[in-house]
Amino acid sequence: MSSDVQVVEKELEGRPHLVVPVVLQVEGVAAGSQGPIHYPKDELEASAPYWNGRPICIYHPDMLSGGAAGVPEVFTRQRCGTLFNVSMDGPRLIGQAWLDVERVKILDEQVFQAVKKGEAMEVSTGLYLDTENASGTDSKGRPYERVATNLRPDHLALLPTGVGACSVADGAGLCRNQSWLGPLVAPSLA
Picture 1: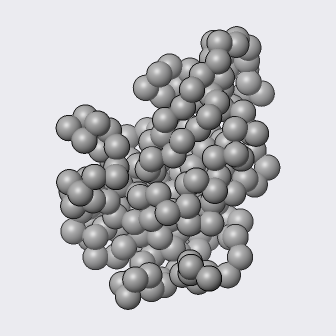
Picture 2 (picture 1 turned 90 degrees about the vertical axis):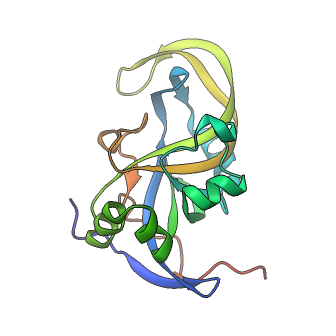
């Protein structure tokens, strides 16, 4: 979709990874599994550091794992990378998806080919949250009855054949963020 997206190959843990820009979520209403909920900028910003190091999965983990990504079965069956350098950029929660080349090829060749071409792909945030009853409309005129608070990240799901609650049309997605966050180096413990 967008050939000007910069996809860089870097090493992480001695393995080649494709480092890809991603917009995880955009401030406003997203109609996910709990219906239309408003995600305020301050709540997204507060969650940003907790997205770092979270797994990236192809599709959401199933209910056999409780929907959580942090179990060995999901790592074996669906995990293809890790999120780093997550922060707010205006109304967007952005970061870098470090995708393990071999894992992506094994799990879904379609995803690998799309990423190599810099094509936008739908994503979905897997997270736990609290809500407060509050109704209104966001800046795009979308109504909501609840507001997200206390966001607790679990994973980011790539959706090669689906549409995320905060979709590519809403400004989210893989290969969407053109604001790289500093040098493209593997994260260190220092």
